[in-house]
Image 1 (tube, rainbow, N blue to C red):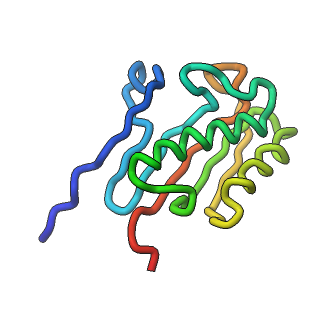
Image 2 (cartoon, rainbow, N blue to C red; image 1 turned 30 degrees about the vertical axis):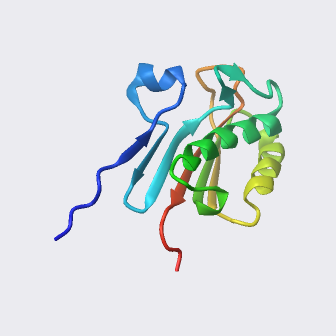
Amino acid sequence: MTESPAPRRVQTDSSWEESIGFARAVAVGDRVLVAGTMPLVGGVLHGEGDPYEQTLAAFGNALDALKRFGLGPESVVRTRMYITHARDVDAVGRAHKELFDTVRPVATLVVVSGFVDSRVLVEVEVEAFQGDPA
């Protein structure tokens, strides 16, 4: 019986990771899970008031975490998008389609009551597969 390799973790400069005690991404087995990711880069909100731009920034952060495992958008098998307003569905969906149209991961889009930073309109999660797709 062979043992599975230990989980590998990625940390970023997010103050939330330190204060709450979590990793941005964890690879275990053939999966890489990326935690809820907001459109903050270097502590600065990108796309304030613009759900499309916030979605691109949030997924950009999530995809940056995947790069640390040698993975890109083509490895994504699941996305989750959390938004604060139903009116933003089209803008968020347009950004998702731009990034993942050729990949077609399973996706979930949920309206939530809010985030810890009230300027944030979108938070995303990503799951990726690292292995032989055959």
